[in-house]
Length: 350
Image 1 (cartoon, rainbow, N blue to C red):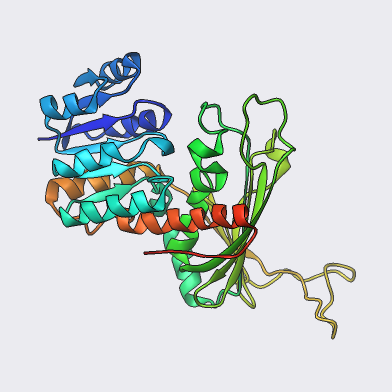
Image 2 (image 1 turned 90 degrees about the horizontal axis):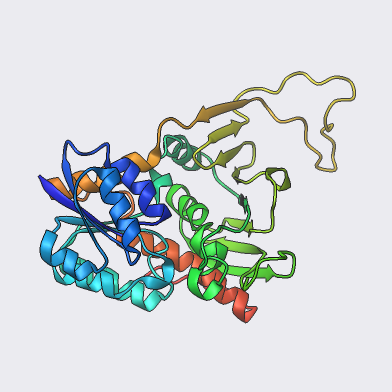
C-alpha cells in the first residue's frame, strides 16, 4: 500500500485529513509534519496511524512517502517543493502555489523534468456543476462575465498581511479566477483597482478591503471580477459568477448551484409587469430558469483523483496539475501588479 504524508497540519491540512480517513482502503496515512508538534500529534491521533514530525526532511528520511500533500501558507513555498522533487515524490500543493511567479515557474519546470505527477487544491474543478457550466459556455457565445466574491477577514495571522498571503485575490478569490479559466477560457490582460480604509479594528491589517478587476479575454470577451473582505454579514452581497450571452445567462454559486436563465419561456406578464420591449433597447422579463445543485464533496474527488493517479502512475485524470494551476496564479498575480502600478498588465500564462 502506498504511503501518504502531509506537511502542514493547520486548517487546510485538517480539511484534507477528513478526506484521507475515507481512503484507508488504498493508502496508508504514514507521516504528519508541522512546526507546532501538537498539531502533528493531533493528526496522528485523528488518523489512527502514522508518526508526527516537526522536520519534513526527517519525515522523508524515515517514512519515505510515496506521495505528499503540501498544505502550507502562501509565503512558505520553495524549499519544501524542491526537496520533494529532488527525491522524486509526487506532490499535491495547496493554492496559490507561491507568491513569486519565477519561483512557481522553477518548481513547475523541475517537477516536469522529473516527470512527477502533481496536483493543486482547486477542488471546485471537481464539482458536479462544472459539466453544465462547460456545456453552457460551449453552446453560447459569452459576451460578458461578471464575478463577485465578498466575505470577511479569515482568522489566521498571516492572511491580513498582503506580503504573506498575496491578498484576497491571490489567496481566496483565486478559486473564482480558476473556475472562470477552466470553464470559459484564458485571460489576456487585466486592470485592477483596490481600496483600503473600510476594514477597521484589526491590528496589523495590511491588505486591500475591496478590489475590482476588468479582464480582457483572449477571444474578445470582457469581464469584471470584484472581491472584498469588508463584510460582516452574509446580507452584504450575493457572491456568484454570471456568464452572459445575447439571449441567456448562467449564474454559478461555486459548490452551490448553477442556474441557467432563458432555456424556459418567461411566464406571461401582467399589464404592468416587467420591462416592455421598445425601440430604446429595454427588454422583457427573463425566461424561466433551470437549476443544477451541487452533490457531495468535490474535495473528496479532488484528493482521491490525485491519490489514484499516483497509485496507477497515470496523471491524466488530474484536473489541475501544477502547470495549469500556475496559470491561475499568474492570472491573480497580474491583478496585484496592476493594482500596484495603476496600469493594465498582460497575463503571463507561461
